[in-house]
Structures are given as structure tokens and as C-alpha cells.
Length: 444
Image (tube, rainbow, N blue to C red; front, side, top):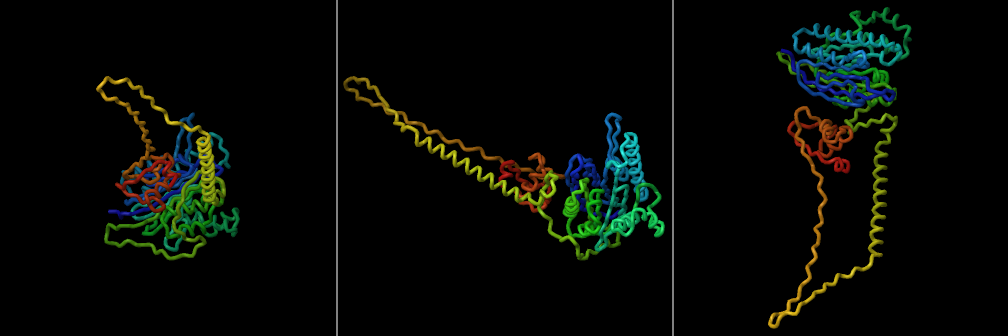
């Protein structure tokens, strides 16, 4: 029987400033996947199981309605994941199947671009794929094109394809030039595997505390390995690490799409007598300060430096709105008072009673005026607060989207309204959440 692995994973994907749509895709164990339907998105996964598969892809989707051609690496990964789940097979069978799926998809995409005469320098030609398979207590990485995977264990930080990364790192540091890469590989026997375009790493035994980072080309080109090491070495959860990687990359303003996925091994429950190994995490001096997870919210603006002044703009808008409201109320009250002063005094209506002479012996009756009826003021309707009972699969983001239509704007305020601590993801099945109106939520 295989070991039970508890995994905590999170992915952030942001559209580049110079791109029309987000061409980065991701796959999270069949539960979450993105085929660039949204420009900016985030997804988290926490689960226990024997086997997992995660992937990040860049420019590996093509569609042509006229020729009825539609290929996507995500659909192929879904078929691959279903096949290895249903059919029994060892880890070699699974990795060969994965490499075959990625290779065939890449060939189809290249042939379609050749038929459409897409230039070689076009960004769509820069395809990339990084996949992580956790099976039989081991981790295997699959890399193609511009894909990158890093892992962190204690104080050890390493690219999962060191043969591929070592010469490139020397080029980035200025030690060797691009023309000297081939000579460096031959001299020091640093060569990529000759099995095909997809590079498969050697299986490595996973331990509790291991962290894996899958990034697209936009993040890799924006940040160096030192910055990636600093962020991945933080003693924080996967959500904050993924958010921090993309935030640091956005500061460089490269214009490329950026996606970062963090997979952390939380716990391994061994089915045998052998005790589970744990990775030792030691304090490490980093260039980035390890700060607690912040409270943040998404916005779709791509203007550089906007976040720096976001709070100042918000408070200035509140003050200006309050001043305008006071001025309007002043003129309204002034107008009412002037009308009251200029109005003629109204005399109470006189009541004339006509009395018919009564016969002798019958007392005279004087009619009394009918009292006026004072209208009862109607009360303004009170905004209804709905109650939502958390179901399986619900997140605060999905609940906000159901009731307000925009989960990025209202998820933080809804979490604060229900006194859920940041980052507002700690909800449980059966929990009852108060859902106020948009106006009440904006005014809190």
C-alpha cells in the first residue's frame, strides 16, 4: 500500500501588460485548471492522497475554427491523469506516458504554426511546460521548452534539471557567453538527456516539508535564482509564497504573462513500519524579509506604481465624497428653511354649523367638528441579510462571486464582515456566513 501524502498547493497567474490575453495555463490534480479564461486568477488545493499531478504551461494551446483544429495541453494532461489513475502501472510507465503526451502536443502545435507561417520570433513559438508527478513516494519533474521547476528542502535549493540550468546560470552571471555554452557542456560532460524534447528528472524521494516551485517563462525572465531561493525558503504557506513570487516579478514590468505554482508536502503517513523522513528546515539569511502574510486584494489595473498609491487614493476619495455630501445637504436644508420663512401663515379652517330649529321640548344639538387624521410615517425597508451555509467545495471567493458577481472586489470585505482572519480562506463545511447587500458591504 502506498503512503498517504498531504499536499498544500497554490497558484497565481497574472496577464502581462503587453499581452491581450493570459496565455499561461495550469493544472492542479484535476480539481483546478485554467485555459486562459481569466486574466488574473488564484487557486488553492489541500488534499490527502496517494498520487498527485501538477503542471504549468506557456503558449501550448491552439485553435482554428475554420480548419476545426483545437489542441490544448490541459486536455491532454486531463487524459493522461485519468489514464494513470484508472490503469495500474509503475512509475516508468507513467513518466513515459507523460513525456509522450507533451511531445505529441508540441509537434501538433508546431505544425499548425508552420502551416499558418507564424514567424520564428513570434511569442507563441516560445512554448514551455513544467509538470510535477508525485507517485509511490517519489517526485518526478517533466520539462519542455521554457518550463522550470525548483525544489527546496531545508537549506537546499536546486533546479530540478540541473544539467539544463548550470550553463544558463553561468551565462546570466557573465562567466561564459552564449557561444561558449556548447563547449562548456562537452568539456564538463553537462548534456541534456537524448530521449526527446521532454526532459524527465530522476525520481527523488519526497520528505515532509519539501517545497516545489513551477514557474512560467515570464517569472523566470524577471527574477534571478537568488530571489526565487529567498522567497521559496520562507517559512510560510504555499499561498503567500506563490503570491510573493508573482509580486516580485511584477515589479520588473517585463510585459510577459506570469504564473507561479507552489506545492508543499505537509505530511506523509507511512503504510509500513519504516518511519517517514522529514526535511530539516534551518533559519536562512535572505535578501527578502520574512513578513507575515498580508491582506491584499486583486485589481485588474496594469499601471506601474498604482499599488503604491492605492490607499492614498482610496482615503482621498472618501474625504472628497464626504465634503460633497455635506455641501449638498447644506444647500438642501437652506432651501427648505427659506421656503418655510416665505410661506403665508395658514389660518385654521372655520367650521360652520347650520342648526335647524328644534321642536318645542327637544334639546338643541350642536354638531362637533370631525378630528383630522394624522398619517403614520412609513419606515424605510431594512436591507435583508442573507445566510449562506458552506457546502463542500465552497470558498469565500466563489461565494462572493455568487452573491456579488465579482469575487476579487468583495471577498476581502465579506471575510471581514464575517470576522474571518486573513487571507480569508479559513471556512468549514456547515458554517453559516452572513451575506449583506452590496451597499452595506461597501459602507462597512
